Length: 106
Image 1 (tube, rainbow, N blue to C red):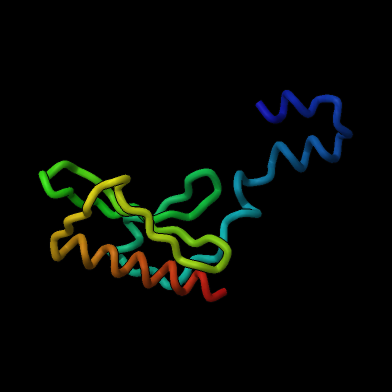
Image 2: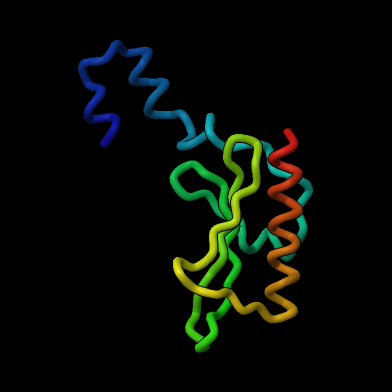
């Protein structure tokens, strides 16, 4: 769709836009991978995020989100909820926070 919107652009710009990898300029270098965090990591809207599954106090499925913004680690919990984590989920959260901290230091 972006290609169609750039038809009136000079030929060099069309070439650059149509073959540049999506989000290439916004993706930071990855910290050393922890297998527990690697499976949770993804790019959403060009932003690297980790999503850790958890539950709330009445056993509904929820998630905690970890991301890095302006050199700081941000932890987002379920809105208005309490997050309950198993030992395995806590290990995943720890791994995600460790990776995010390394990324924030850069």
